[in-house]
Figure 1 (cartoon, helix red, strand yellow):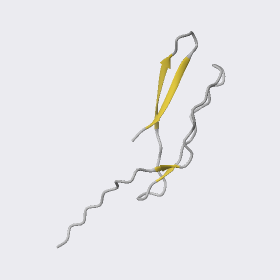
Figure 2: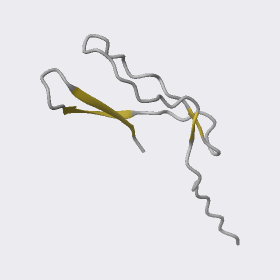
Figure 3: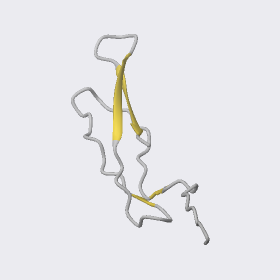
Length: 69
């Protein structure tokens, strides 16, 4: 009898990871749809967390969108 264990140790590759941008307060874009590929699954569902960090001035803040594992 042979037991074969399979592990996916290669992280997915993002096809279109967004770049950092600076915008006016009335022009904050919606989060882009990010796609990725993996060696075990051809298409990977990418989800994200969004954290708002207030800046030093009123109406100044940073949105950090981080992909989830």
